[in-house]
Image (cartoon, rainbow, N blue to C red; front, side, top):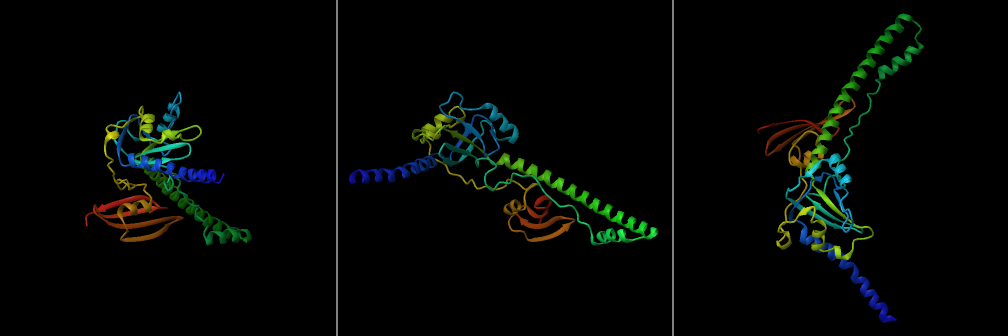
Amino acid sequence: MLRWLVTTAALSLAATPLAAQSEAALKAYFEGRTVAPKLAMPGTENGVDIYPGTARPLDYSRYADRLKDYGTAIKAGERVTITKIKVKSKLIEFQLGGGGYGTFGDETSSNVSTAAAPKTRREKNLEADLKRETDPARKRAMREELDDLQAEREREDARNRSAVAEAQEHRKENIRQRRLESGSRFNLRYADRVPPDALTPDAIMAALAQYVDFGELRGSTPEHSNTASRPASLRKGMLLQEVDAFLGTPVTSTERKEGTLKVIQRKYSAPMGQVAAEFVEGVLIHYSVTSE
């Protein structure tokens, strides 16, 4: 009995490293190497779902919807780096060129919010005084002044709405652009769990053979590359932290209020020259580059 328990415990302890070693082996074999998908890849971390061993491994209707919703991040036939292999309980993630936009930390909302311009103290006082005033002439003058103050507040709200609309449009464009630059992935999905015989390079290449051109990968040596996420260029709609990551620490930074909007102006010293950037609610709206 004791021998049986010891044997069982030993087998149990050995089981965990085997799963970990399988993922580690897949990472060592695939990550950093290049392949070419045979179909366009959608710009989302949802990627393309493949169900190996089923009558219909790819749901083309769902695939088409993702292309329509998120655009094409990787063109058919375009060579791209395998950036990550991840084994989970019921799926194997085969990530390409970054794995797709929408993972933790990616900005997916284009909303830029702002509050309505508040009533000034003078406007509040006039509203209170107007209720108590009995003289018709004074009451008329107070009403005219109050109308002017309300009209100015409405004009300020209109200016703010225009600035917010511009910021939202730039942010939408930035998200669209980043989707096209963040790669995609294949998700090999299984009904109950990932079978042990699926955790080999040959099994993965067989499951994806219809959708990926592996070229000479099978017998080649992995070529590792730097896949650090970094914007490809400066453009309107980038978030403030993205611009800082791209240009480095600003030389100067000032902040002001435009009505209820927070406007930040920063200057950077970069290889391209001196960059002056203006952000509205954290979204890059304008920038200019001058030689230093």
